[in-house]
Length: 146
Image 1: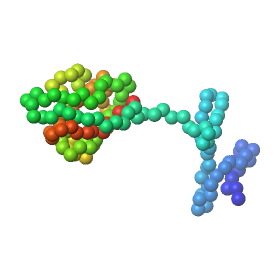
Image 2: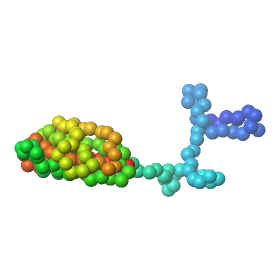
Image 3: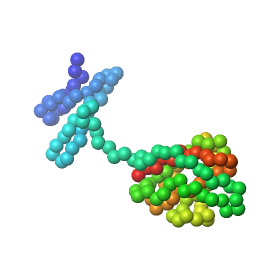
Image 4: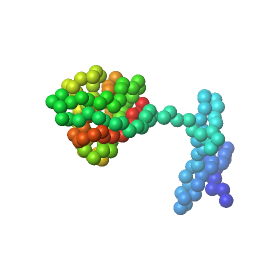
């Protein structure tokens, strides 16, 4: 049975609704298109969206903190349009991260304990560097959003 209601003052035109516990909720069908046209959203005509995730990758970090000025592993380079980055330490040791617009040992940064994550807005001209406090190489997962 149709749950439609007639809208007074508009020539009694019916409006599609769904009756939920005696309250009518208007049913709407999403569509998209240029001004003056409408394409109904369906499985064959999906709503167009702009992806914001540019990359989701695991990076290997080989530098360790045994040296006075440790060698930093550049794990990302500047990315045009990047707005935000999410980093997860998927290793078994502390990883130190730094941000800079040039390769340098005087960066600002932070550390992540194993299995911890961090997200922040990072400009597109910034590279991300890392060094770890363990032995061998360690991995981090980084998502970059544009």
